[in-house]
Image: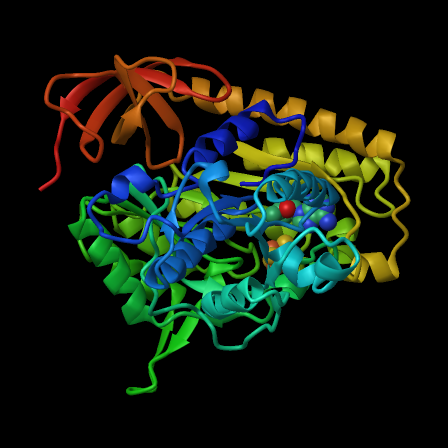
Length: 484
Ligand code: 5AD
Ligand code: SF4
């Protein structure tokens, strides 16, 4: 989920929804006896991983005696967890930092900290040249936050942008920020070793490392025991998860981890994101088809539908190879929904190559896609090797074409669901009406339906679909099956 695509109202909406969850509110902590004088406010941008990291940061700060607040003005520590994936994402953060700085002038003593990818990318530039912040902390340095805050309070600037080969925050129990109490993210690995030529992530998040499988299982179990009914296993490239048990020497693969989490309880839904097409295995697909509670949905970013561009992108698969992967998925899991990430106007992309991306959307029949125009990022392979030579106007026009086609394909995908009945996990009230619930089916589609007595978030119901737009399904409850 990314926050800087101006053309996608749907995505914006999703992000606005998750923004509501930015802070674990003070009022929910009544009675914890924590010192209310030290309040922190945290805002998150970018991918799900960042939102998940903010929950780790919140937990570290809570341990150190800080209390979260959703009131920006009430906080003595303001943190912003940032994204560098596209230029626009960084611009948004800079705007926020300028606003925080104004606040700081009105309230001397307030500390402002930048976390995440921008901190890692810009390092001390943010402290020195731009003088916008007091603290700069990279994604692997969050344990150092309390000490750095102390330094900053003593008038020093606090910075730690060291990347680690080991840090997975395995032992930290995330503080669920503004959670709906039903669905949660579990980070299973960090970093990325893939080196897609357009991508800054390997530089900002460092080398790939997998988290202890037992700590993942314990976190999932604890969520379940606390009423959660869905976990999403998160990583930049989940299919290359591999954790070696130091005691037995045995390695746990992603497929094995998925099955272990699914076996915790049939009423715990399991999702995962993101899959790299080159790494997703048949074992994972078989696990999905075998376990009812592993949701039939795969986010399988294609990036481009053209083999020459894919090669320049260093994606390590061709158009045909990707198409075979899609065929395999539908063969093993016929009702699987597949979604994608798409970049338009990558270096030297021709009109005919752009057409290949359009035809891929139809071939793969994506239920939805996150779509972007190419944004050159300093230091990446592409920035060093290829001129960013597709004019902005053309990049944007191609993006518009991709969006229009995807909207049609999504609409057809949703129309095909009319008359079908899905198991839906209730997540809460629909945004538009307190008389209706919203929840997702296994294919990750949001479904809105009228409430029935005795039901609450976290319950499962069977919903028959009778209306569709390109973004949502509407239906009615035909059967109630609570969990347990
Ligand atoms: N420009 C545009 N989009 C990008 N992405 C990653 N890097 C860039 C870039 N430089 C997109 C990819 C990736 C998603 C998370 O963001 O589609 O899958
Ligand atoms: Fe970036 Fe590619 Fe790694 Fe995804 S798989 S984070 S696009 S380098």
